[in-house]
Image 1 (tube, rainbow, N blue to C red):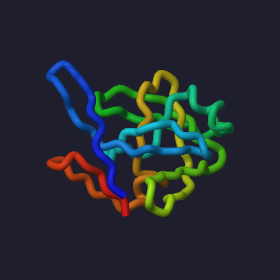
Image 2: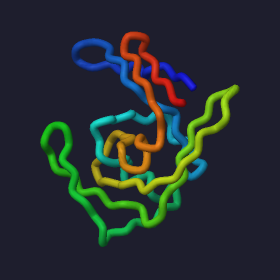
Image 3: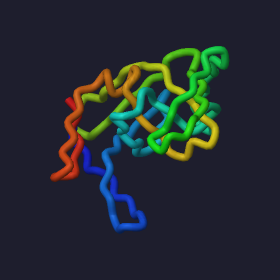
Length: 132
């Protein structure tokens, strides 16, 4: 499967970022940023109820963001189902624990039980992401 990077506008013009069209527990959440530097998948807290996820507050972790800010993230009790679909290809499905954080504006796909389950090629020049 191959996907185009997503175009985003910022103060210096346009930037293209690697995203994947992800469904979580069967719910399409849209294009999610592939963050190869993120330890785990972190989602906005607002998605918890939409996805029907219970949280394991006893296993809350603190993550440090790229800008050095600390973020409290609470893991799901059970692994959730990730899926990626594209016409003409077999749907990719896997399960993993996700973390939810207050004030998290962007959903991030991280390494733990997510990106580590996939073979991904990022081609910045072509602005494409390939999953095998």
